[in-house]
Image (cartoon, rainbow, N blue to C red):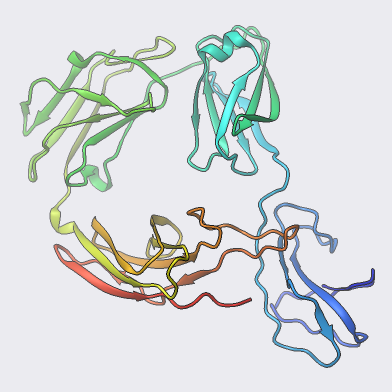
Length: 373
């Protein structure tokens, strides 16, 4: 889309990534590109992709090789995507974007005093647990940095009933393997009010190891760890008898058990990146990715050249990318049409890194200068 500095607008539709627009009058233009969800040639959906050129194009001759990148903006307005009371009585809310320093306040002081809240890592979803459901409706206010953003209402019928069963998950991987050097971590699906340690049995090669203590994870009332010197080559079974866990509703867990063993040390190795940065004093994020590049595994902030080490990681292939962290906030940021800000640049190293068993690899990573727009 070419927009003259006057109201005139010239548009073209193309799906190839290249387009040509002829017969334009000489003058000054701005250029926008839009990938639409509805074909109306209007940027009117938060799911649409936009691109633009910051500088005015002074058209006085044929012009070519203008490049720009589409990006998805962070929605300007916070909007709830889903809100509901689940079958187990949990209040569930999810929004169209993250909420910085998210907070929750229930406008009924009695309910607010008994609430327990769990937020997603992306800070766009909240699960609220209430030990009393004696209400017809509940108003929930969401806050950012202590300031209210939105207040949502959920309603229930007095005869609604809720069913809960405590379920446990573990940090074991494929075929019940526990990463060497890690504690066994147990996560419940509801906040836990108490643990009866006497009902826990840990078996090592058919032998009861005796007393085992669960350690609660700070600031997480659903997660516990078993601190025990698990040994290579041994087979383990941990059993939680009925009533080991009691949740905040007074429900007790059914019998639960988990079999596992330490993963083999040869399935892990170390990758060291000797990073050379083009500029000192600027901020960069060196990020370790899965082999297909879809998952960010680690992120390290750097302001000067140096070594970045990834110890005790699985012996598979990885990719690496570098974010030019312009605003120095420790994460990649998208662009904004309103502020005429481009997304932060990202550079991908062209080849994958392979981590070999019991081997400390050191690889050079020379980061190029940030491209100019």
